[in-house]
Length: 560
Image (cartoon, rainbow, N blue to C red; front, side, top):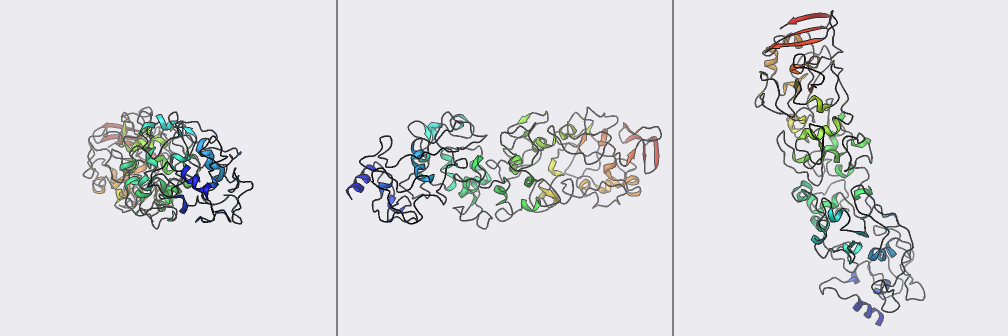
């Protein structure tokens, strides 16, 4: 009893309001509340401390160090050097790596007997083992790591107590945990509600105003087990909704699930968030996060990265917001995403929605050509270049000042976004209540409405619904811009795509004389004429000529 009293005094030096170790799982005595406890030993502190015969390099420490070698955390987004555990982290691991018996102390002639099967801490969430690769890194010098000088980490002097570094400036287990006080749960120094503990060191740009950081939506009912999420709402759980500081399945970045998309779909399957991204990803034409694992990396180069489409390629979960931003700006859900600008330069954060699409559909492999064209181009950045002879107005207003078919509020000065065409058929852009954006659609290639490209298609409002979303069907079929529109589309049943390339024609491959009005023939339908020429010539406003063969009929400089 005297030894225990002395130990309690030795462990004092703490605020009077601090909680007691007696009712925590660190009370390994016979009176402890946890399943790991002694068979007969009544003293509490002896499992870690002793007033006599303790080690000189630790606070009255009564245990030997584990002699294990540890696999430490490693990540492309961590700039520091992590060695073997030191300081208080090494002390904690003398129990938590499971290699030393819990009752194996220095000042006792024999090992303290524990309850049957509880001699080693070798199971449960507190068992870390020797593989620390999926645990928050410890024993690194904070100031010289990315934590001290890198983006989204606080300066060393800005860390707010009681979260703290050790005297050497290293981050240790005790930077976050107080082994004597469990009032916050998990022996945390401060609450992790609303990410308070994480934000003591981490400072993700845009987090406090983000959807994930501020949402009041309940997580109950999510496929994320409610028992794992401590709090009721997305914002209250904050970082912990996606990250697990001990035992994260992903290892790098400590994500709860090794499959990157599952960290998102646990809520975005309709169980927490009203709209279901999971449903869109099951549609015939879709982005495919399920087909790759471990390819995405926040530091990847968009010009050389392996092709993949994880949720994190388009969304920054720390910055994304709920509000929508009208084209050509950045929608709230895409804020913070990286991309490629119109000149092909990598951007840490996009300024326009199209810059995100360029990251995968431009210089790095581009998009597969769906329709065989006279002018072949898979780099969409080159197709939308404002210096082109014609293009849909993604980056800038179009070149054609005469487009009578446009449906208000569209005008020739308007700019459109990629998602005005590429989106789910039930997205808000197409009059539905589903999720916005190009996650998946029943119409290929990931289009928000039907767009038939097969020859001999019977014209209808449904067949070309995508085109008629912006271009008046009545105007097109009344021949207000081209006097043979109706003849081609209705009578000859020639699809719009036979003549028009909806993205555009690169200035390096076409000219304003031959490729205005998005003219770029589908060579599976339109072939060279008798003079072996396949050519359109722009001869002025609403005038032109064609030399080609289509549906068995040859045209040679035929004017309109």
